[in-house]
Image 1 (cartoon, rainbow, N blue to C red):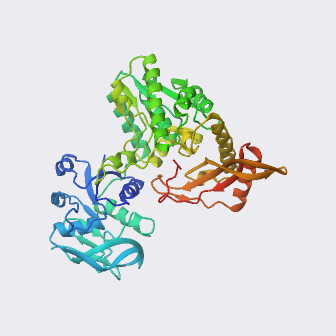
Image 2: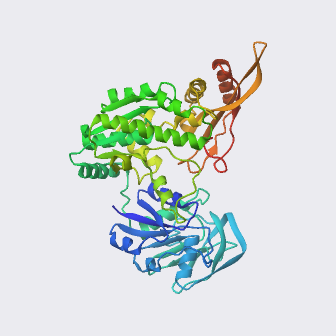
Image 3: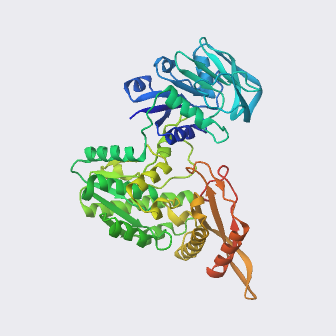
Length: 511
């Protein structure tokens, strides 16, 4: 499979480069800036290299540098922002601090539109984010575009197919960014554009079958998008060699356990074991208010329950997980593992404890690609299109101590909210929507009587992959209707508020 390797110099947009390339049906992988040149040479499928942007100054003592042999591979190279500066630095050009740093929109003036910039509109808008700029070209390079503040905004070496741009084509604000990437991939690199959900499924089924052979696979099924699509893909590959275990930890939404069991056991005919373990989780959570402790307790309890049930089922050689590409990228970023904002709940402790080999069919996919695979596999839209739901469930949406009484209030309120979103046709416009029960009581009045009850927060965000998010601008009438339904229909709530925080600075979940 043909691929592009993206060398990551720490840009906040690196993941977006990979996504935009894949949207053009070309497979791309992100690796650290110091990825081995030998690895690139050994892989005949690598047809191009992209150097990402980054926050460093190219001459700083701790500035990241890739192996300059990248420019001798005789395959096309595209440097973006810091990547352009790295090309100049590596090939005896010159980079200096700009008199005026350039952040935000700029107008790109085209000097030559015969290859990389073919099809650009005159005075095209681009997105800049740099403090340094090129002041002298390396030998053999020529300028193909400029801005008012950057005399050298795009360059090429026509014989070696090395290109560099000072702006970011991967972001929405660069109006002809997709055109540039298309030109690079298809006109310059000559990619075929054969990356698609169908091709992924065919390859994945063959790989799973070859890896597993006649052995058995255990899959932890949560009912969410990732694990659901993984289970169906595995079932298609190995049939009854797959056993799925669904653990009802008592922290699910209303009727969720019954819906999961009905769909996967009755409609999709998967071998599904359902385990009721609410007492285990709630007893361990008793008295706990710290969100990080909640996550750790739930993760450990899940491992204990899953391990106990797995031993009852006999010998399994493999454990299937729905690990996604953003999780993998974070572990290999150029600065090393990211700072932990919050722990992520999965079954990561099981392979070491039970000698499993891992199968992670989606470790090279983004969330929207998993959804596309699920649709290709024929999963119902009620699963594919559902909003993300955290592994710790409602425990991290009950702020403070978790109890069955507080969970029940939250379940009922959340159902009212989600039902209203579906009725109004807004559900599919939103990446994630949910309720948060706050550890706050306020004075209210109902039926001429004083009340002192709970505050509920509504949350709804738009996003592509959850890495950044904006709050959803509901019509006021919708918020008024939902607030009224919850206050009147859910005993224990007398005040409803709406969260208008974006990510960053906030996270999507409150805990």
